[in-house]
Length: 74
Image (cartoon, rainbow, N blue to C red):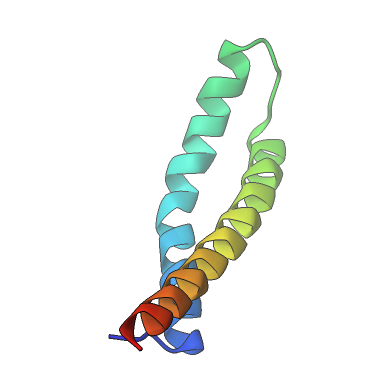
């Protein structure tokens, strides 16, 4: 079944939101383990950047896979 652009966007956003809390917590644990000092607010900022990248990646990959499905189905 082909997914609309809107549905791809909702799926990518949902995936990003679900992972956001996990990523924020991981940032606060992992960066200090590697010697970087991080506050909750700077960790939030870092997580926001990676969440935006994650959303774009998820959306683009979903659209590419949908295009491949259409091309293979012809």
